[in-house]
Amino acid sequence: MARLLREPLRMDRAQYDRGRMVNKSLVGLTGLLCLAWGFGGLAQNPPAKKLFCWTENGRKVCGDALPASAVDSARTEISGKSGLRVGGVDRALSPEEQALRDAEQKRQTEATAAAEAARRRDLALAESYTSEEELRRAYKIRYDLIDESIKSSKLAIGNLHQSLLRMLEQAGERELSGQPVPKAMADNILKQREGYQGLQAGYQQQLRDRTAIDQQLQEAVARYRDMKAPKADDAPQESGADKG
Image 1 (cartoon, rainbow, N blue to C red):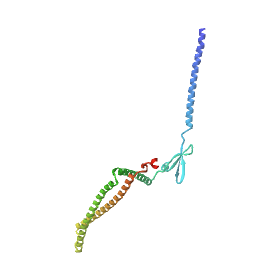
Image 2 (cartoon, rainbow, N blue to C red):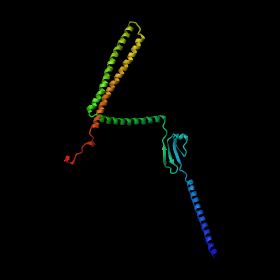
Image 3 (spheres, rainbow, N blue to C red):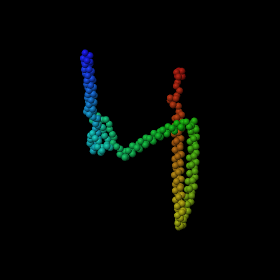
């Protein structure tokens, strides 16, 4: 009797184990099917291609590959899926155009630096001098220095001019008397003449420098007055009692 009772239990246990194995097999098969479906979806949806359009010999050309001859050309990139523009590349600049662009960028950089230097100069100007009179005294020192240089140059020019005239007179007298002008004298005259011309050029530059100081003083005074002038935001606000 006991054996008969245990036999159904063994059969139920075997059926239970077979059921678990079947369930595991079904789960594994389902996973494989899902994985295969995922790979199939990837295979069916490859990355979208792009089309390139450029101008060649006056004609618009489009293709899914860019030839080497069109690498430096301006081109438009179009989505092969939507047909919409997704990007573009400008044509490569010629050496002359690149040089012009570099020069313009350099000019803009220098202009920005000059503006910043002017801002710092104005700030230093306002902080360095307590009054306009003090500013003018500082410029007077520059005037004194340039005026002294101009005076020295005029004196040197006058002396060299007299020396050159005497040498030319001596050379002229020798020629009038039929005597040749010695090479050393001729070379000395040429040397003195070059020195005289150099002094004249330096003197003219000093005069221009003094004129520049005049302009700089006027600009400095104008900037100083502007920096020291009360701003609209700094004006005292009138109270209601003052208005009444």
